[in-house]
Length: 196
Image 1 (cartoon, rainbow, N blue to C red):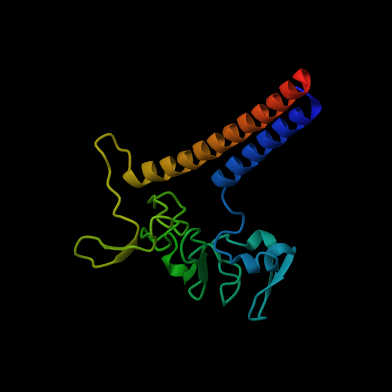
Image 2: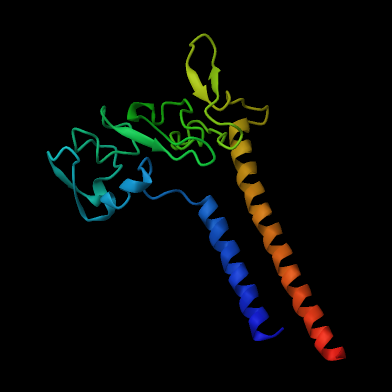
């Protein structure tokens, strides 16, 4: 294997590793709109209403420092707060922060229920934001009602794990096909030079 093929192989492996890690990692600023991420980048941050300032370590600490909820975009600590659902594959949306970790899947990507009490499957690619009624409570829930099997495994947890696994497998298959095509192209070019 020459140095060019070796470099291509290592670059492809690095790309696969980075993409798989990106799929499985959690965002650092939960509930923050992408355009606001820079706003939260400094060490001392001013509340959007101008009333106070807070340090970075007070973001999403489950204590409301700002009356407008600026410091708690990813928790339900502030009554006036808003949580941003990225909903990749569907329509992004803001929900009231009181809907965060309330045991109802409001975001089709399930990002509003991150405390582990309930596992929401990512339904964004499948149409997302589907509404279901649960019991006699007439509460709207994104996704589907979670059921527990006999051995204690929750269906939503299984779906979420399978979705991540499918994505990782698809990325690996694409990378292997790319590497095989690259190898075959290099091999046929080498054989042509040898016989001419």
